Length: 305
Image 1 (cartoon, helix red, strand yellow):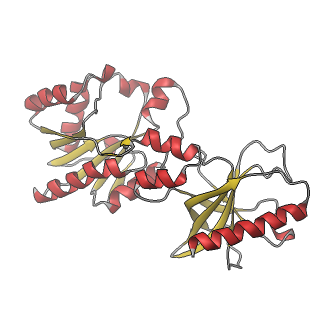
Image 2 (cartoon, helix red, strand yellow):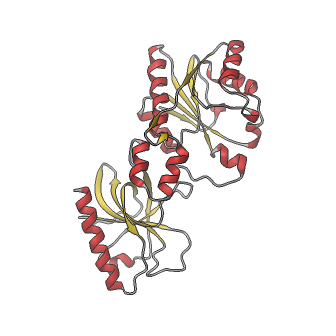
Image 3 (cartoon, one colour):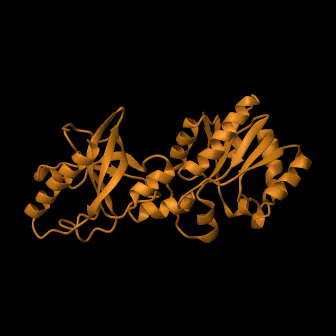
């Protein structure tokens, strides 16, 4: 899979294309992506996905939107589905003012667009004028075809990234995983923390996670910790460590790996969230905290065994 970080860097012929943010590459997205890959390859054409960063809604509204995936994570998920090319275009206010005709002409010239696959509610261009009908009309002029894919829904309704972000931000990890089709992950480089875990015989790995991603609410979680090709059970804390640092403002991400004892500073770890155990609590004594950590570890082992 090739991942381009600008549209200008890409040049192809006979492309089959879909366009969207595809944050999280959830089950609904996969319906479109798998159809794109299957049909493009049947026509001996490259399956191309054009996505955007930052999130268009964040640029247009000025409001912060924490995403489910970084651009590279999104590209990796798309590659796993068989996509040949991912283009992550920087979204700007200038880009949002382009007409649908201008933008599609650019895609035709850059990608040799042959077939466009879009979701049922997709639109692009200034004022979202480039809906399915308008894009089909432009396709007749530029010589590409358009196909619309219906939304995937389950008993809770249409599956959307917005809904999944809400579920994770409120701690409903299980339901979010169901809609994603996989377990939500946070990861990053393991960095030095305060070192307090070692003093109470529960050394933790402090993860420098991407601050632009959705963070589950403060609390304790049962996770799988991935280090290279290995994975370990982990009782994971997201929070401010109120027993020791009640003044902290930005939540830390710390994982206690079960049955594990080696130096991993500087390595990269991915935490796969399985379920939420409890809220973060400020304890009156260190002994009370240690007792609770023992309970958290026992519960994590029971859930993951």
